[in-house]
Length: 201
Image: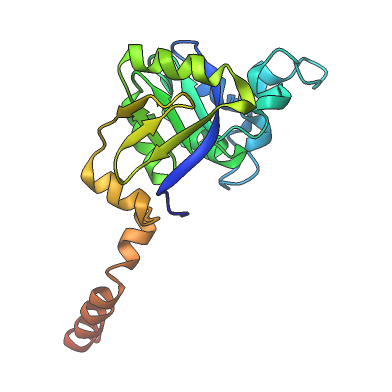
């Protein structure tokens, strides 16, 4: 998993509340177990019409937001069914940070396991960043995970809270497999001792 330390990116404004996981990645795209390739179907029903043409009004189809790395969203982002494909699709599109007043718990935790930083801020601070994101490609939001700060293009600075362990994992690029592999030497030692003590196993 790629390390997350700092980010300077364009924020896509999505002020809708209750954006659920079926909106993020509709159920027909859940057949794959690969983490890659889902970005093209992110927000599929909002991005495309019935003939698979892009809907120009949708934010991620607008030229200024095609390379967005941040989503500034409404309350209760990621609610609905617990599908890990939702953060997979977000990450595959190139989004590495979501800013919202609140999240569904399972989605929130899945983000950290997939290299995405979900930031919780009070509504009034999200409103400031939403207006900043509406400026398009001329406005870049700066995020520093070490100092736990967000800086708007106008210089407004907001502090955010993040669990120390989740922060450590993101900054060091550690998903569940990476955390396990940190203990590889101890695991090898245990297995060697177990094999000697119980060779019949």
